[in-house]
Amino acid sequence: MEIFKRFRIEAAHRLPNVPTEHKCSRLHGHSFAIEVHVAGPLAEPQGWVRDFADIGAAFAPLFEQLDHRYLNEVEGLENPTSEVLARWIWQRLQPQLPGLSRVVIHETCRSGCVYTGD
Image 1 (tube, rainbow, N blue to C red):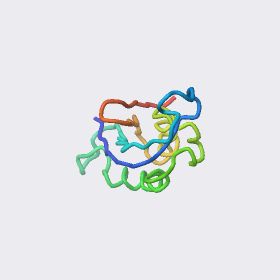
Image 2 (image 1 turned 120 degrees about the horizontal axis):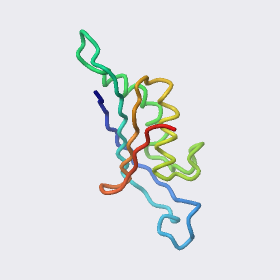
Image 3 (image 1 turned 90 degrees about the vertical axis):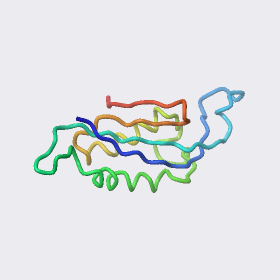
Image 4 (image 1 turned 90 degrees about the horizontal axis):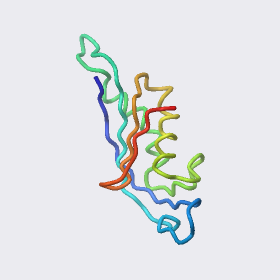
């Protein structure tokens, strides 16, 4: 079974590795929705895969680093594509969240990515 918790951050970025005429080369912002998924068997007697509060606690320090920030200034996010952001989050959550199965980034309501580890 798989559970998830969704977080929302507001952040600005620009993509430095695209041509200067590309719209994403300019500074802009997104209301990112980030889903953190954890898979595993139902734990008894609780009847859950994992406490949602555990996911929230693990993500809290990352939220502080990302929300209302210029992502290009965050170490490791100098080229903050959705794909790079998903991997960056995974690398920081994976040691704390056994069963981490995917990180989903919704950059817009119609665009995003899914990362399931290397």
